[in-house]
Image 1 (cartoon, one colour):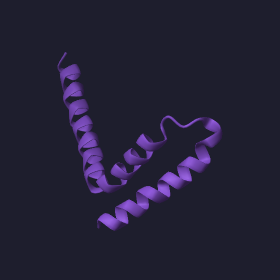
Image 2 (cartoon, helix red, strand yellow; image 1 turned 90 degrees about the vertical axis):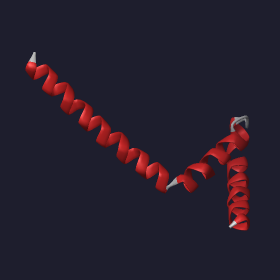
Image 3 (tube, helix red, strand yellow; image 1 turned 180 degrees about the horizontal axis):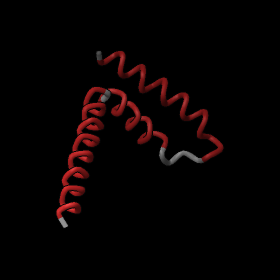
Image 4 (cartoon, helix red, strand yellow; image 1 turned 90 degrees about the horizontal axis):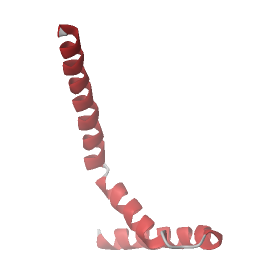
Length: 70
C-alpha cells in the first residue's frame, strides 16, 4: 500500500511537470495558436474540393491582417 501511494505521488509530480511545460509553450506561442484558430474558423465549412484554394487564400488574409494590426 505504501508503494502504491509513493507511485501515485510520483505520477502526480510527473503530470504536473508535463502540463506545466505544455502550458508554458502555449503561452509563448499564443500568437501562432490564435492564427491557427482564426484559420480553422474560416475554413471549417469548406467542401473538400475547394479546401486547398480556400486554405491558401484564407491563410494569406489572416497573415495580412496580423501584420497590419502590429
